[in-house]
Every structure is written in structure tokens, then in C-alpha cells.
Figure: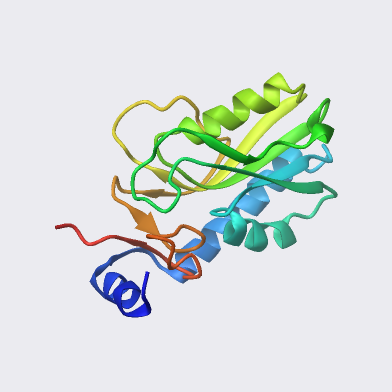
Length: 181
């Protein structure tokens, strides 16, 4: 996307959660995760690329030992609607017998996180936990419910704080929604 089009999208977008509200939600999540998993030495898996900002802000706030790795699975691939689940980086072998915490940017319809849970449990994970920065209110049941949720977002295409719009604006500290037509 060219920079002018990206700026136009941002100018027309609606602010959903300010940078301060997002940062506060990340701090709260860190406290909740520390209380629940602080004595577990979990393997934390960040879902690339959307969860990179969320993960980078959350990890320094977790006050317990952990192992870290990544996985890469996507349904969007630069579009604003999901398709089939595509694995680019599989879960690591060392998840077998481990307590695992998966960090993701958003729970949209829940298909991606449900596929991750299924793959990890099938690979012998001892316990599966998940944390998402944002849970989209789609008004219908989802195949998975995260253990930890930072913020709820409306049923609109949102971007910022790791979530992109046509490949742009992952670097925003706040969360925005595309302008409604």
C-alpha cells in the first residue's frame, strides 16, 4: 500500500481504544497471567506477525520464568476477511509435556486460535492457555474462548497495536476501526 493511501485510511478511521487504554489492558493482562501461570514455567508462543507488538509489550511485564518461541499461522494474508488456516511456522517440538501460553493479537471468529489449540494438544501439550489483546464481539458463539482477554472490539475491521490493515499500521499504539461505508 502506498503511504498516501495508508494515511487516508488512518485519517478516516474511528479510534476504538486509545494508546493509554491499550497499555493499561496489557498491564492488567500481565497481572492476570502472572497470577495464573507464575509457578508453571510455561512455554509462551507468540503468533506472528500480528501478536508481535502485543508480545513485545507483555513479556517484560511477566514476573516469572518462561520459555519463548513463535509460530506463524494466518487466515488473512493481507486481506480484510479470513480464508483457510495456513501454517508457515509449526509449533515447536518442545511443547510436548509443557504448559503452553499462546499470545495472539485478536480473536475474530476464533478459527485460527482453535486450530492452534488443536495442533498443540495433538502434539502432546500438557495444558493449553491463550491470551488475546482483542476479542471481537461478532454476536455469535466461537469455537474457543481465550483464558485472558485485554479488550473487546466491535464487529468491524480493526487495526493498530500489531493488527494491520492491508499490510499497514501494525505500528500504531492505539486500536482503530476502518471507516464504515
